[in-house]
Amino acid sequence: MASNMEPVAVTSQKHDPAWKHCQMFKNGDRVQLKCIYCGKIFKGGGIHRIKEHLAGQKGNAATCLRVQPDVRLQMLESLNGVAVKKRKKTETCRGDVRKVSNTVHMAVGRFFFDVGLPVDAVNSAYFQPMIDAIASQGTGVVGPSYHDLRSWILKNLVHEVRNDVDQCTGAWGRTGCSILVDEWNSGKGKTFVNFLVYCPEGTIFLRSADISHAIDSADVLYELLKETVEEVGLRNVLQVITSCDDRYVIAGKRLTDTYPTVFWTPCAGRSIDLMLHDIERTSNCEYDT
Image (cartoon, rainbow, N blue to C red):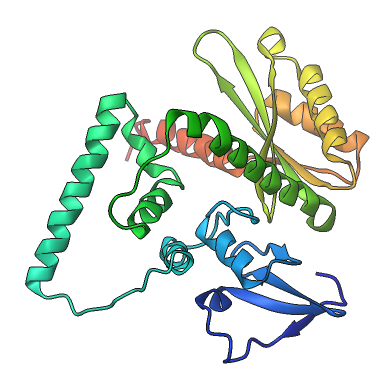
């Protein structure tokens, strides 16, 4: 954060619940707000814009992807003027909640199996926020139409993703970044390499390359790594993380010879997998006692 940003205490007169989830700074005569979850800084729009950011509601702010579900729901309720009523739960109340929950679950399951959605779709980071948003509107909610989804909703989401990507790429120069290289096989004779870029703001997918024609070539891998470093920016790249296979080792060492400021690092997860595989093979051996 710039040195001219001075923190400002949030006074007790500020009653909006969103004030508990942001920090206030003064930059000259301007007041700026910072989300405490993702670190995004808002130079205008006031507390309402922070609330839209936390609630994930379309408007003038990109969605916060790190806020807890309960905070997101609270911000949604605040935006829609829904008062949160807290009561002691008796056994009867618990039974009513369970009955409502079962009804919701059956409705969700009916939709999933009718359209053939994979059940692991519930693991999406956006599944529970979707449920929370629907619940916050009360009864009588009408879902988006086919044309809504393929027009303004898609357009807004593309804009939201672009803002998130811009936020990540904008941080590369400040924090540095790591290039992650992931090789995978399509199962149909095609081998691809995915290039992703990680920084404290998040991870973004950069591009994919088909290496089926030169799967064993360290030269091809070196050229791909070199192109990716130049695309991201040599001054921004701290390290390149790849598999520890021999061809990646060769390509990685050539890359560090070309760019001495860049480190090559073997993937820790892959290295541990190979270690465990060696241990498994060793444990299958018989030893004399």
